[in-house]
Image: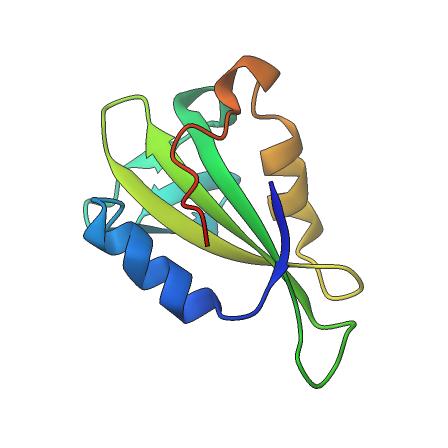
Length: 110
C-alpha cells in the first residue's frame, strides 16, 4: 500500500490505461458500476490496489483511491474521502469486503 501520493487524477489515468476503466459509486448499501448499473455486495468486490492521499493545502483533506475488480470481471476505481468527512456507510462497505478479496496484485509503482 502506498501512503500519501500527490496526484489522484494522474494515477487514475494510469490505471485506466491498464484496463481499470470502470467507475463506481455507492448507493443504497451497494457499489454501483456507473457504466452498467450493476450493483455489487462486498463479497463481489476485490481490492487489487489502494492508494492514500493527503491534501496539498489541507492535510486533513484525506482520500483513498481503491482499484477494484468485480466478481464478473469488470475493473475500475473508486475515490473515497476518509477522516472527518468520510461517508461512514461506504467505509463500512469496504470493511465488509472479505480479507481474502484484498491484495496488491495490480498496484502500480509510482
